[in-house]
Length: 61
Image (cartoon, rainbow, N blue to C red; front, top):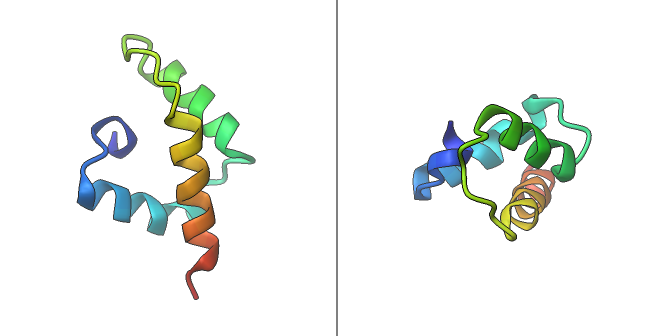
C-alpha cells in the first residue's frame, strides 16, 4: 500500500521497511506490486524507485 501511494512519508517508511520485506530484489518487489495492484498503470520508473529504496536502506546504520 505504501508503494502504491508513495507519498514523502511513505517513501521514508519504505526505506525503513525494506530490510524486513524479504524481497530478493527490486524486480521481485515490482512484480509482486503489480500482482497485488493489477489495475495500477504501468510505471517504467517503479523498479528504479524500489532499487533506490533498497540502496538507501542498505546505507542506513
